[in-house]
Image (tube, rainbow, N blue to C red; front, side, top):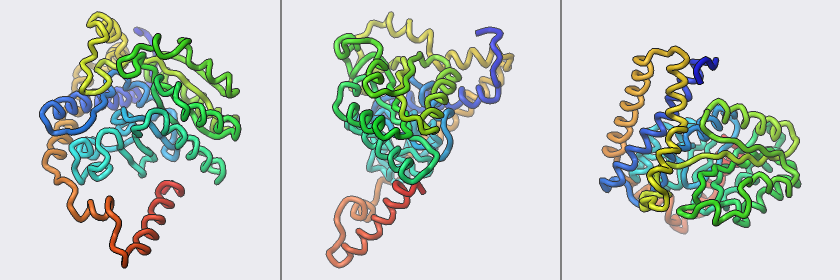
Length: 346
């Protein structure tokens, strides 16, 4: 990449965000191994350019919905490291008050409508958000991320079919990391090019690798503007690779060490760092970015560890039905909250 001209300030920001996601995930894995995090933990290591490039391709008023591999997207969209780590630790200071955990992060302020645990099912929600945008005449779009394994699920096709019929402002993005849990792509799909499915819905499509965050941003911008202009939805397949197992319980023995090391040569974080150096950014300046990220992640872990778990009162308010006397008032209150935060987009 020597000699390539890029916007260095943009690149610094993208590199910092990708490195933040990488270090956040590595420390999450450490905390999980230490018993600080319970339940499932799906890491985003290796796929950072998609979340960061995707976030750069849209505006603050647009929406993002993704799968249970959601930490990277939450951070890329603007969620604080503290709120994300505290959620993993199951603390009240977390983005979902400690009730969502790894798979169900949520941030209304940044229009990040969650990680979702049901494979492919959340794409119908992406179409629903896009329908709301078109119905109310809002000039925004919704990005719906999924893995390649979700493309065989009924919900995937239902979401695309409705979006195409109604020309909804939705961009469906397949993060193809080649393994549906531990099953290779060759055993789950009869064709390698998943964007061929777009032809069945008359949709705009594109397919490319996610090694360069700038390429991800620019190609997704085209899909976003296509959807935003009223021309209908888009289906984008981005070829990527996760360097860890499907979740923390998966040692990834179905891949050889040689395969993983070969893919690490195209590590998007490494590519961005080298591009900074090739762009004449002093190595000390890059190391300073690394140090800032290290401190932010250290602070997030400490904050999460020292935060309190959800109180009994909060659990009663959010999990259990109130007393009969306060039932109607409570239902009306939460109806207003849901309407303003999700439907109204506040």
